[in-house]
Image (cartoon, rainbow, N blue to C red):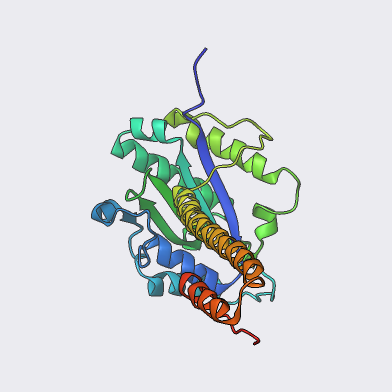
Length: 265
């Protein structure tokens, strides 16, 4: 039996409802903003679609795609798809095969989004993270209307259908397998994993600092309790002393403890 656990095709797609979300995605994909996990020494290997390598160019394409369309207030303005595969298998593909895989995925996504290549706002292939992957920003435009529902929304299990279709029409010929249908397993992009790892490290550091502070507080409390017991013992003894002896005892107490004692004599 062939072990297929490390050659899964990975396809994810999400909705973008606001222009600021679209601009943020463009800034990430065009590497205008670098997340912590990016190796900038490898960023020159990244590939951007010709003519769509600036936010201005991509937003101009977006505005042209929406020209003449009445946009509802709650409309989905764009989709972002991420295409990759299990790292073990991705690394077995040659650079030429990887580019062909991402290119075929783009053709499939264009068909899914109405068949017009002008609906591609940005196509980025990243080689500066842990594994090669492609980002695709698409306008969900079908028959001159924004219709995200017809593409990815509505029917229950639609995402599973799309994952099957992507496997059959694109991923299978590159040696990938389809994940288990209806599996509860999730795929996290490395940047998300890295952020979680950083958050965990920060929480760990705070916990260690809290433990140090807790131990320090316990030591101070123990010292205060010992001082209090000493004072109680000395006060008990002081009741049996005369005035001059009592004053000397008070002075000794003040010298050996943090407390100031004011006698009522």
